[in-house]
Image (cartoon, rainbow, N blue to C red):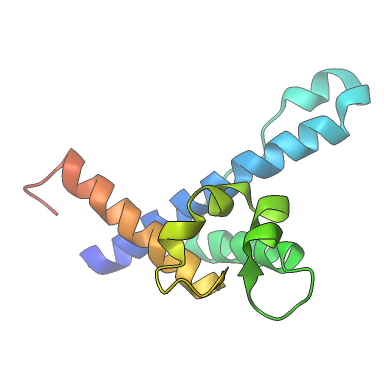
Length: 121
């Protein structure tokens, strides 16, 4: 049960990280529309929505559609992935996959949960 909960938490955390970057892009594009530019998109409420959001962002960032993000693609389309690129690309191949990104964020979420409540995790 903890593993399922952890997966959900990890995916939602990852989706929120990516949403922050897209919210900034949305604000910049809506700059002329006034008060609407300060609204932040709603966070996904289910694991399925979080996975769909991440897959959509990954697909948009993967400009050559090879299933891999290079450092340049990550910088342009997924800034949070770019910030942690060297940690995600543990094998130093020069690219990351959607699966590697998910595994990284899940591990980070587990680490954070352990710090917050070491007895239960």
